[in-house]
Image (cartoon, rainbow, N blue to C red; front, side):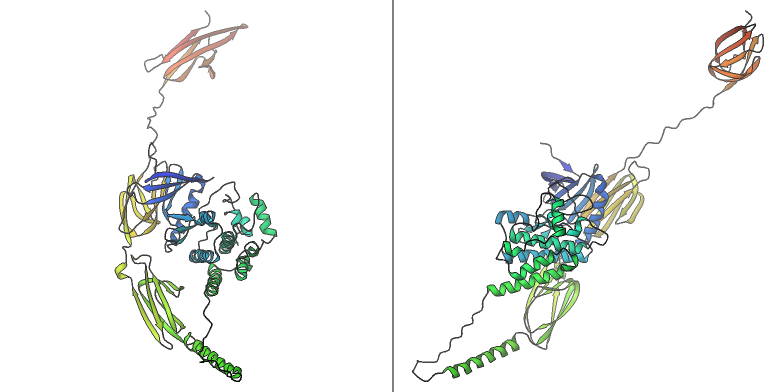
Amino acid sequence: MEEQFIGSYKVLKKIGEGGMSKVYLAVHQDVPNLKVILKILSNPRLGERFRHEADKLALLDGHPNICRIKHFFNHGEDTVIAMEYIEGITLDEKIKTEGQLPVEESLQIISEVLDILDFAHGKGVYHRDIKPSNIMIDKKGQVKIIDFGIAKSETDPNLTIAGTACGTPAYMAPEQFSPTADTDYALVDIYAVGTTLYKILVGECPYKGDNEFAIRDAKLFSDPPKPRKLNPDIPKQLDEVIMKSLSRDPQARYQSASEMQSAIDALRRSTGEAASPRPVDVTIDVGPIRKRKSRKPLLAIVALILVAIAVYAVYHFSGSKTGTIEISVIPYGDVYVDDSLLGQNVTGASLTSKAGTHVVHVRNEEATERALYDTVWLAADTVLALAFDFTAYLLPTTGTIDISVVPDGDIYVDDSLLGRKTAQASLTCDTGMHLIRVENKNATRKVLHDTVWLAADQVVPLTYQFTISKPPPVTTETKPVFKKVVVVTKPRGADVYIDGELQKEKTNYTFRLSYGEHIVKVKLTRGGEELEQQRSIEVTKHGPDKVVFDLEK
């Protein structure tokens, strides 16, 4: 079978098709180990829209749990998006294999999803189509979100609708069916997360219907059944969290992803404490039992003393007193203390916290060693200084783009002019996504767009070919050459027709005729009789000078 190529990628297999896209698994022809997912957008009218989406998604490169776009280019009339290939399974596939998930596992997954969304929302990017099939668990157990801003269309109400309402009906918020300029898509994403949590805990979505319109009406005018009625293992507090996220009124939902994540994490902590009971029995050796008077008053006093000691110990040692942790990071990183984020891409952070043991964790996704950990004891009324240095682990942060243009053109990289009317240009720039634009005003297609993903120390060669429209053939117009020809009749006064057209003048008269063949006809009415003669003449520079008709013959 002949190998199929799409751009620089060799297709391995087709893995899906929707109303607006075809999906393939492919590898780069020059880097066989670089697997990607190719989405071929078959509707050319959406190409510009997806180019803007790709530009927005470049803002999300800083989060490792978001499926990244690696390349964006044209293939014939189609627009192609090359996306990161994630080896793992979707949450939807996990549910189908394992059934509804345990509470603790569900809360962990949703907490990570909310953390990712909080990052994206902070960049002004909203997913609008959160659902189990867009959440992946990779082979390391990490949660990743795919399909940021990539629309699909199918007739199944569980798949994305094309048009003004973007999303999947079963997971869409009520206001998402008729969006306006005031629609808050952060709250739309929160509704979808609540629906996803409902699905993985219960095994079904809160609203069902034969089509998107039935689902829409149910969401607009009714509340869903409480998940705890369908799964008694769901704690009451979690039931309340889910129902709040599914409020028909957007303002009654959690107002940010971080707010909902805090509620989820609080439940995780309480669930973990309930699952790990602490020993409460105290054994006191009181010696051999003898028959004596009742010791109940004495035992009560001993018990009170023990309780007082325990309360004092809890108060004194559990962190009622505080200290300060000062953290510096070289060159920068994301700082966490006890899994709580203090700052992103910062050079330092400070935290006043309870005395006791704390776990400090700093991440830098650009380093070979992405995470550094330290477990410290913070004493009361002290300042603990910690330093984390990623210098030895930093990766190169630049690559090179080499661009060739045939025949030549104006080259722009990220909207900055690199060269005008040039056939070759090279640029060293930061790793990540870059937008290429090449223009040639004389070409049939005057502007070519491309999007390239640049890795560290990588040299990416790009070639763009323009088709130049052929100029119209140059023709030298020769002015017609004329000659004076006298038309004479006997008798005079006849009408003259030249090439079938009656002339204003009658014979005898000198006419100006162009070189070439002409039909000359004369016509005269005399004594009620029509006299007529016709002759073909060839006018050249050599003659004739006169044409004579004798109508009396």
